[in-house]
Image 1 (cartoon, helix red, strand yellow):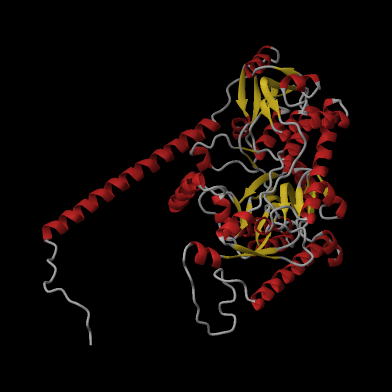
Image 2 (cartoon, rainbow, N blue to C red):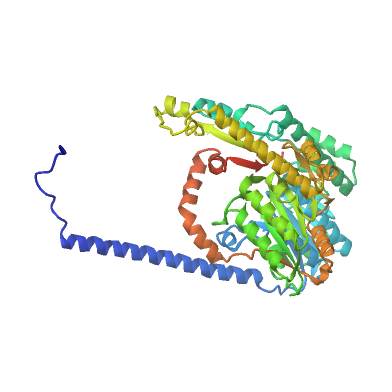
Length: 599
């Protein structure tokens, strides 16, 4: 019998007038909102067109200096139209800088080169890339190169030493103190919250320490060993280069770093780290009155005005920059999207005009599925034409896997690579829910381990054993791939893998890379392998860049989530990192830690 109570009186229906009023009001609000949105889109499109015209407006000055403004974010490829449009004009690209250095060396209008440094994201490898390009520039012409900064990081100063004149602001600073690595651990916080993190990795992968930030409160011996090894390799190489550039000894620079007697401008001048102390206005006056540069043109604009010859033969360049993630690009997030790279490799391989492919990798790794898909795509592309891999600052873990089948692998001495291994992390939040929030769970199962793999209770022994087999099996697959790609035995690869990070200098000695150098060398090798002349080839980026409008449409779809994430990140420390970890696939092949080596 139905005992549900009923109302004695039926509810009064909404009148026709009220219904019409509500509908009309909704229509008006929707129309206004749509109009405002359309106006914003049109305004953005107009601004985009104006911005594009401004960048590509011909340079009318007969004599000028070119400025490499390295004071903001430095990406591998040129920043996309939408980010530039939305005000991210501080972002510059290595691609634009290299184009500028190559073309301005023989441009009679260019009287000098001005490198403005300070506050950039320049990595050691990017600084090395530009330093080599600067030396090539100076070998091709006698135009002066002046480096100036209000405050320089060590990577920026490393680049500055390749200039004819190094200047710093009288009240500025040079962050010259050697490289330090500091890892943040979250176990204490998780313990207080009642969250337990399971770290599952191959038994031989002690160096694969990414998950240790959730299971330890300090560095493991293996992690400390590898960090000490690669930061020392990086620093020793950098000091050797800087000492040669400045005409001092490596011992002198190390003494300055030990005693912090190069950070203050007066000390830096006294210890021959810089040539002069001055203001930026003084540099501009020097360029104008001494070198005859009536105007200063930024490298971004100069590169936009470079007209490439449309040659039939092409060398394709594909940028794999950022974290490895599955799927295709969305919004404006910089990442290595598996589907995009697979498509780009396939298109470049099928294009009869493309004679070779250069894959530029700057990635700490990421999702295993995306990594496997891209590695397979490299293998398939290589069957049709040479694939030269050029490593930037990072080509680690999944970033190395997608590189290992390259026809040739080129890395910088300071590239961080290797990290051949895998791990899985699984949180368990039973105590958090029960003790902190008063939430409990209960289960009904059809099989013994139906609930054996859940975040609400500890892993069952069978589930843990399954996950252990999973990571062990993939580690064997990973090391075998590297062995096949590099022509080595799996046993040897295992002995140098185990999740350990190496510098490019060390990786060359171990056989993980073929040669040391940057993008120009990679292009030369690509042409050589393809049997064509580099000078008779166009360099074409795959896939083609999306227009600002296409990117805007993608951003609008993701806009609400981005806005919420931005607000949460402002009040919750490490929120973005925690969100990324929560979205990751269980199995990861990535750099084993997130650290700051600018110190």
